[in-house]
Each structure stands twice: as C-alpha cells, then as structure tokens.
Image (tube, rainbow, N blue to C red; front, side, top):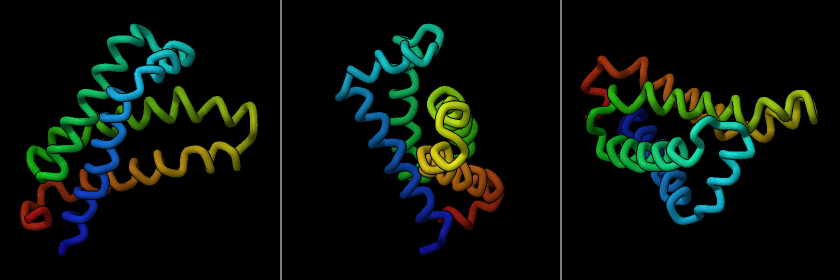
Length: 123
C-alpha cells in the first residue's frame, strides 16, 4: 500500500470520528461559545458536517484536492481557539502536548497537499 493512500485513510478516519462526535455530543456547542467563536451554533454544525463529509471523501480518496484546504483551516482554527491560549497560561510544553494531534494532522494534510498533483500516489 502506498503511503499517501494510508495517510488518506488515517486522516479521513480521524476527521470522520471527530465530526460524528460533534453530532453525538451536543454539549460541545457550549465549548465553541466559550472560545468566543462568532455564530458558534452555526459554525459548530458546519464544522461537524464538513469533517464528516471530508473524512468520507478522504477515505474514498475522492476530491482530495477540494477537501484539503478547508481541513487545514479547520485545524488552524482549532489550534488558534483551543490550543494557543495554553501558551500564555501553561507554557510551551503544555501547548505542544495538547496540540500534538492537531499538529500531526496539519503536517499530514500539508504532505497530501504537496502530493495532490501526482494521481498515481493516491491509487
């Protein structure tokens, strides 16, 4: 199995589960409000829906180039709203520990972005 194919499966599964959990556990809407996300109710459901759809598309390796940019922005938003405040509160190591999955996914998405022109890498 090619590495890019495996990366699509893994990243797709992470986003699929993350999006489904947002639909299952509606108490997370309040966390969006507490973070100060504008129009938090709408943003919450849009992010959840997009994570589910993009996760399924990545698993199926369909329209990968369309999914990557919004997923990168979702991860940057997650880092900015949830992890960045840890830098001032708890320091660098707490930030790095808390954001390890987000940073890993961001690196994998950027890797897939660099491979998007090579159709053979995804087959």
